[in-house]
Image 1 (cartoon, rainbow, N blue to C red):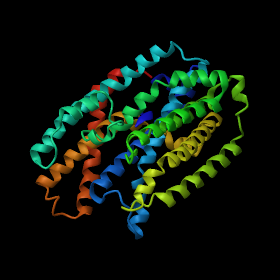
Image 2 (spheres, helix red, strand yellow; image 1 turned 90 degrees about the vertical axis):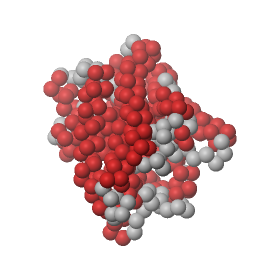
Image 3 (cartoon, rainbow, N blue to C red; image 1 turned 90 degrees about the horizontal axis):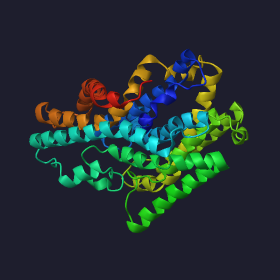
Image 4 (spheres, rainbow, N blue to C red; image 1 turned 180 degrees about the vertical axis):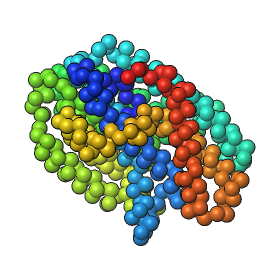
Amino acid sequence: MNTLTEEKHSSNPPRQNNSRARTYFKYLDGLRALAALWVVAEHVWVSQFNIFAHPGWRGLLTNWLAYGHQSVNIFIVLSGFCLGIPIAQAGEMRGGALQFYSRRARRILPPLYAAIAIAVVAQFLSHLLDPTIAKPTALAVLCNALLLQDVYPKINFLDTPLWSVALEWKIYFLLPLFELIIRKYGIGWAMGVGAAIGYGVTGIFAAVQPGMSLEHTCPWYVLLFAMGVSAAYICFSDAAPMKRVQLSVTSWRWAAGFFALALGFLLHKFSTYNPIDRHAYIAHLPLIDAVAGVLIACCLILITKAAQASDNTPVVKVLSSRPLVAIGLFAYSLYLTHSVVLNLLRVLLYKFGHGETASAFHNLAILGGFGVPVLIGFAYVFFVLFERPFTRKR
């Protein structure tokens, strides 16, 4: 999701020479790729083993796949970070809010609508192969076209990961507000307003629809987005108010360590992924995601400071590796299309490959060994056809 959709010109900062800039921002693409691959791996695993944890050695190797929701947290914070970089560097939103909204619409919507069209075709094919699978409905298509997947998650069955894209699209309209608040009052006020809006809307949902699961709605992501924008200002703004939050690298490491321990504790306490405790996990997502957001923002600041100090830092080198950067360039397309292609491959496997009688590990080996390369290849073709034409030149 969805830093997949950052402002492309932020990868070439004006205050640095070109050779430095190209190396400097590659780690963002690498981080984006890892988050997208995490989502893909989770969905492949869940397609055979459901979302519940496993005991013993299998659990030690695979239970992390059940935490794919954390990758969406990465996307949201990273999106705010990437969009905040050029604003923090310039000291203002160049071109104003209307130009920003226009750029976002051109960048996000054409690939999104192409993915929805492909999802409708794939859903029809799946229904023809397996009549137990629902046909696409006019209501589902309309819900997707209006980007209401997050508001009505029960209707979002054509391409389920699109809920986060729809939510992020709405959050974009708040970026000019955060920019104004940070410039006039500082990042503390921006995160306070983000928390008030995000958790205020969460309370409204809970009051209007009692008992509704907000796992695929997450209004509190407004706060995570504000965290990402604030992190960009901390790293790239020369404004005087930012000097007060320029903590040492050691301080940021201590902060990251503390929130990593806090997140680990919360996931251990609430995220056991069994049919009983999963309700507790979902109920505590507003808290879990907030802690995860702070951790991700701290890590972004640390990685950025490491990149500013030296391009040879191990973490930066790994995230800037050629394979990860290559996948990161079309990670948005991978996020948009992987679930649709995976579901169709699964139907074909069960229809023609005896998947219903084969073991789950047999099906997982096929979907992992053959299916994942197909997912990535399809996403790249989709990127070339429907995303790259609308991407600003780096």
